View (cartoon, rainbow, N blue to C red):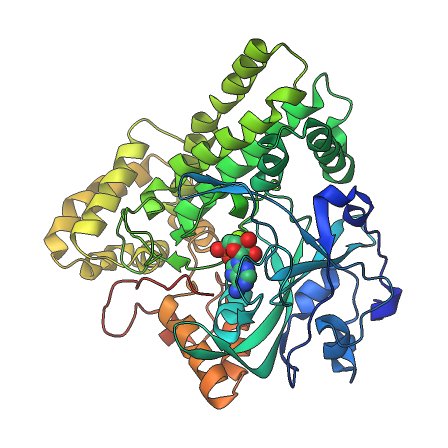
Length: 489
Ligand code: AMP
Ligand code: MG
């Protein structure tokens, strides 16, 4: 494990031409202090977790005294926001400090969010608030705990600096880790300006740094598209299976690594509601829970469009090639989602009728206001039939439970084996909004960060029982549906 200055920096993005970014330095926040440090994320970059105790740790990571190895820059990108193309977005409140290669040879961006204005701030203040930093910090660790690909977060720093949102809040910074922060929108930025040389440099950079295994394929750019389609399909299948709504699936929030990126007004389902909208500014429900798989395909089509000039074919043929790749999306998503739901139901082998069994359960759950996570966890336990009590009308569930039991008979495993496997895919704990809110309130109102710590510990292993923490497995106390969250982060 290494000290900060011993980390193995290799800042490949900073070596790209100036058209890819603009250089800025972080603007420190008044009275910055460490709110929480994530030792698990530190290990990803070979950082000794004891480094967090250094008196200069916060200063180094928030702009007071930067490491000489840092080459802070704001990446530029564009994106389709709510279906409309915006030609210039970019890091308006974040800076890429540098890239670390760990002992395993993996590359991790160190991105500081909330670091002050950049050339892409478009009138924004360049800041993040403690509330949204905690939301992202907790959720990225929760997603990782659930086995869903995601950016990670190394630490949160708080401050006394006032930041104006819907009300006065305090400024904070989040240090985020990701293989890279290249987004679909990074490709769009060059494509729509017809800067095809830069577009090729970007694609080559991505292939060189992150998809080396594709470089020797017949058409590496097409192979790249194929991989991003597959990883995104699987990512969204993971979201649907665990009941996660991202909330702002704009193309600038879509990672080319197929990982969850940019946690804004996200929400986990409490009671199952197919059309759940977590983002209170999403008036049309474009990013409703059940629309995510289609939106991901739309976003992938946007990415595919940008790669056309690079494909090894004449324009019309290139479009056909890209279309053929996009046509694979549905099957990859459907198969992956079906496999995940089968595992949630403890069914080892696929049989005709399984999809209906699952779809009928979801419909019943919606009609009966059943908590999504609790239902599957109950089905995993020693008395699955008690799941009926979670339904407003328990009788509505009985016929389904009979069908389910009959289907289980056809499965080769013993009830015990099945239960064990189900408990490994049906979490007991998810980051319910009311839990995040309580942790945020303790931190913001009382400067008490213990709830963040306890919540993180539970969410890192959400399939374990965590005796004594059962209250966190329960639906919201007032039985309220998952609430909509403000986008003002
Ligand atoms: P987001 O909704 O967080 O994905 O951000 C969309 C765009 O708005 C990105 O270009 C962000 O950098 C920018 N942005 C969001 N909040 C701020 C802020 N407080 N100051 C400056 N830019 C911001
Ligand atoms: Mg974003």
